[in-house]
Amino acid sequence: MENIAADVIPSQIEVLHHARLKLQTPDTHAGPKTKVGRNDPCPCGSGKKYKRCCGLN
Image (cartoon, rainbow, N blue to C red; front, top):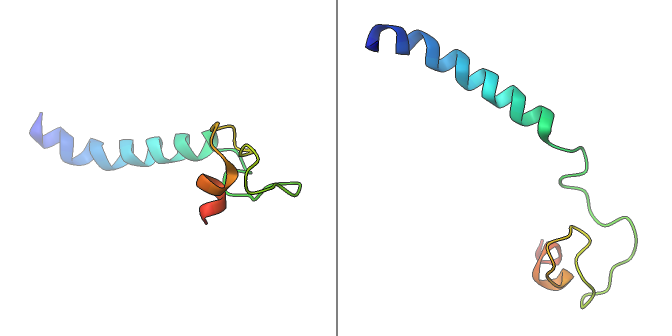
């Protein structure tokens, strides 16, 4: 088992990395599409105020 692990683990990490990239949406790090007030709910859907969520960046 230990002999096989050295060969299998790197390829499985690459498979998992590509699967994670496919699941990400293209707008993951995009800013808000419209003007959002500081005290408005965050458009990312977290339920927090914009100033306490995406507005921190």
